[in-house]
Image 1 (cartoon, helix red, strand yellow):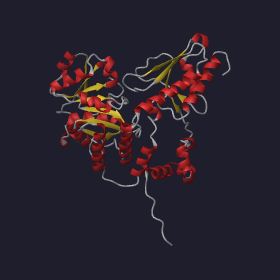
Image 2 (image 1 turned 180 degrees about the vertical axis):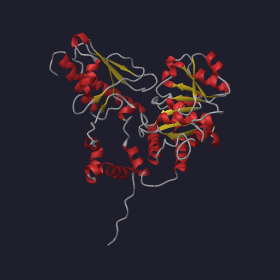
Image 3 (image 1 turned 30 degrees about the vertical axis):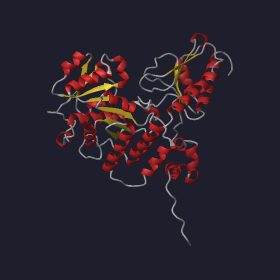
Image 4 (image 1 turned 90 degrees about the vertical axis):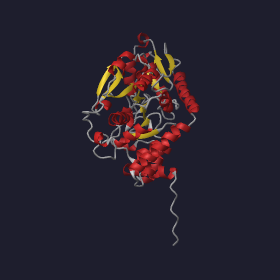
Length: 413
């Protein structure tokens, strides 16, 4: 009997195979592809974990974003072979750097991983004897300068390397703080409005002192131009999340910047043993999937995507037109999460309903709807992000909001 030729592994076939691998234990491989196409959360249901409609944005506690089918296919395809991880890091980094338009790139474990490895690069300079000693920085450059308003819950990603954070507020403070122990000048991009020293001046101060700079821009794309904007501005290293708007795996990030520093960061990372970054293992699957995600992100029609987000907001606004006193305001945060959102406000005396009560009511039921806040959106009313809604979910959000608000007005929805 003549054997049939082996099927060619296409992205579509890889996705089907991957769905079978992922869901097969729960629903059987015969049903896996259909389940994947419909986003049926069978694995989550089997664990008693509810599927959430994400009207909050690309937040880590909800899993960042959802990978497009092409990215899932790339991840699955990468899982089918062994490769040299060092070689893969080099090849993927070089291709991502070319796609984005920077000197060099490194796939990391989220933007947080990029911050730690970027700091380690600045402290060690890629020297083997220094790398193996971290977080013991005795005798090394071990101070990181940052503005007082730029502290965040991510400070640990810097201090875990063994550095001391030096606070400043003015350019004069920076000049006084600079010394032969200064390893790095750090800038938290979302805090640019709150600091007295803005990006361009920060870069110039660092350049004059010949000190490298690291910018945390985790959630600051789109627009796509921001992937290169800050490097062109003069920042030596820039950290982005790979699992937010880029829509790669949620545990990935990018460290972009000057080749010498990216190479030094790489030496502090997995698979090198005896390094502070050994535990931050980036899988071969994650590297390939993030590359696929970057390829999609830099080539997609962002204007069409913007129109779709605006359309979703329109669906919600139209559904709520008959709610007494309700006002809808469209906003786009200036820096992080730079996508359309809608803020809904109402006369709480007439509707007898607080924003907190609306948020709680949206979370009630078999399919919770999660809302939240992102930086630069204030604190009035409730914020709805349509960025991470899936097809048709804007209608569900609109209907639930209408029922909740209409009931509070004394009328049936």
